[in-house]
Structure formats: structure tokens, C-alpha cells
Image 1 (cartoon, rainbow, N blue to C red):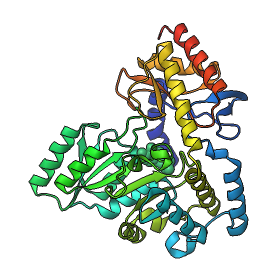
Image 2 (image 1 turned 60 degrees about the horizontal axis):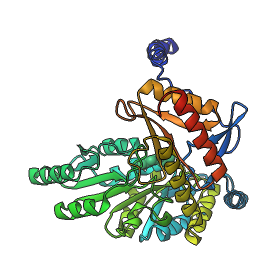
Image 3 (image 1 turned 90 degrees about the vertical axis):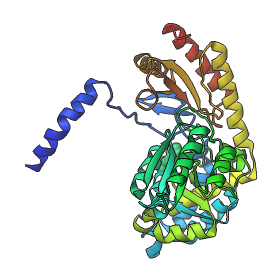
Image 4 (image 1 turned 135 degrees about the vertical axis):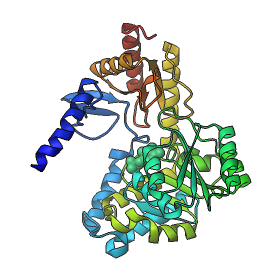
Length: 396
Ligand SMILES: *Cc1c(COP(=O)(O)O)cnc(C)c1O
């Protein structure tokens, strides 16, 4: 009987989504997530990954994962606090702290889990969180979980942040106030104005929390957006993911020894979810070693991004205000944007349409994620296809 109840609830909702063309059909990759991927038996140039440095299928990382798997096994066997903490996890955390120039770090199973764990470990219903309106879904959920009052701040609007911080302090209603922002915003590729944020935070005594999922491995010669601005000792929480530029899976919080000690006893995904696999931890260590050893991959990423952006502009596309390798191609109308992306894929370029409600109405875009793994030839091919499809749909 209960199956019927669920069916009655889900059937109309699924039908509605499908009718509106909002039901996302997931494409399956028939091989590794590289600069070229195979989908439906066809090879296409991949402009949709977060594999910024091409490390996701780097031989050295693969070997490190194999070696650690042989040494430690495929699973950690328990949550970290029971007996899932292995030498390799501690080694990873030491490496992250060194990489982020902080006293300590704690690793989680994902970036999403970091935000679930870290925000609610520190903030309570007696507190307020000022949150940029375009912050990532995991930040929004983490804030909700904490029970703190959530005060949305206009995107990257420092006057609004000043006003909201002043109002929150003067209300006298909160024990603590925190400001949370993405380091790099994933839809537009703009960078958080950290020097101004730190100034405002110091004026009003705010805690500061930067989720640098798209900045780590990309900004600051790889060390991230906070390092880029030289503010490593001014930001209380530095969150990063190990699944984008680092190429593996997992996430971390970097900060003071005291903060990390606290998270180890209060962050619920750390306490109640099994540790990341030893193979993943080892691959992450290898990736950070490669990053700290040389800026070659980061340099190549930026060079490729510059080449793609200039090429698209030259053809006549609007690439928005991105300050990072994230390269949106703003098409405008939602249905045209969807059609544009479909045609790109037909022509061998895999770049996904992002439309309302993920971005404001009328600003539909195809988002391109160039990586260090793309060759000039691939990017030239991407540009040729953009020109062809752009002309065919009268977008340029
Ligand atoms: C991608 C992303 C996450 C989630 O990271 P995962 O490691 O994939 O869970 C969290 N925060 C931001 C800002 C992100 O862009």
C-alpha cells in the first residue's frame, strides 16, 4: 500500500517537471573524466568538468591510490573518531595545512559535508549568519542546519554587507555574527572581495568563512583565493574541496589548531560518517605535492582560459565578468540557450546550458570550464564550433 502512496505523490511532480522540460537527463561518461569524454559512444571535447588541473586521471595520483589501497585496504572501516583515522588521513591533514598556510586542517568526505559540519559546529540559534545571496547550496543548507538567523546579503555588494553587519550588531540580538562567502562564484567566475570583507569583519567583529571550492588549485598559484589576497591569517574558516582542482574526492577546513580541535569533537559528518578511503587520501596528498612543487599546471589552466575567453570575445560572444577560468557564454533566452548547448554537443563540444532558476531569467548561458588538460587544438576546435552554432542560431 505504501508504494502506492509514494507513487501518487511523485507521479504528478515528475510529470510536471518533464512537461516543462525541467527534468534533467544525466549523461553517462563511458570512461575517465578527461579533456575528451565518451558519451553515447561518441567522443566530445569536455568543457563541463571541475577537473581544472587535469588531475582526476593523472597517472601519479592513480598509482598513489593503488599503493595506499594495497597498504591500507579499500575502506577506512569506521568513522574517524572510532577507529577510522589512519596514518594516511593525518598525513593528508598536515599536507593541507601546509598548502593553505594555516596551523591545522581537518578532512571530510566531501566539500558538501564540510559546510554541513563546520557551520553548525560553531554557530547556534543565538547567532546570525550574513550570507552572500549566490552562495553554494551546501552553504545554504549548512547555515539552515545551524539554526542561526540567516541574513541574505546582496551579491558582492560591500555597502549592503556593511549595512547588514551594522544592523545585526546594533540589534544586540546575537551572540556571534559570521559572514560566509564563496571564494570564487561558480556561475559567473567572479572573486570574493576579501580585502574589503576583512575590513568590514574587523570593524564589526564578524567571524569570516570562505568556501574556496572553485578557488583552491586555481587562485593564488594554486593555494587559493585567501592566499591570493595574502589574508591567510585573517580568515577564520577556509573551506576547500578535494574533488575539483585536486581531482579526487573529499573536502577540508583549514584554520587555527583550536578551530580544528573543536571540529574534531563537534562536526557531525566527521563524527558520524565513515572516513574517506585511504586510496582517495593518498591521491589527494600526491595532488597537493604536485601543486606545491610547480605552478606549471595552474599556469597552463590560466593560459588556456585566457585563450578561450579572447577567442570567444573575438567571435562576438559575451563572456560576462569572469575573473577566473570559469568562462560563461551568455546567450540570454532560456530556450535558445538550451538549443545552443544541444547543438554544441552534436558538433562535438560538451558544454552545459545553465538557465533560470540557477541564474537570473534572461541570462541563460553555456558555461565553459577550460582545464590544464586541454590542448590548443582542442580549444581551436571549440571556438570553430561556437562560431558555427552561434551563426546558425543568429546569436552572434
Ligand atoms: C562544489 C562545491 C561544494 C561541494 O564540494 P564537493 O566536494 O563536491 O562536495 C561546496 N561548496 C562550493 C562553493 C562548491 O562549489
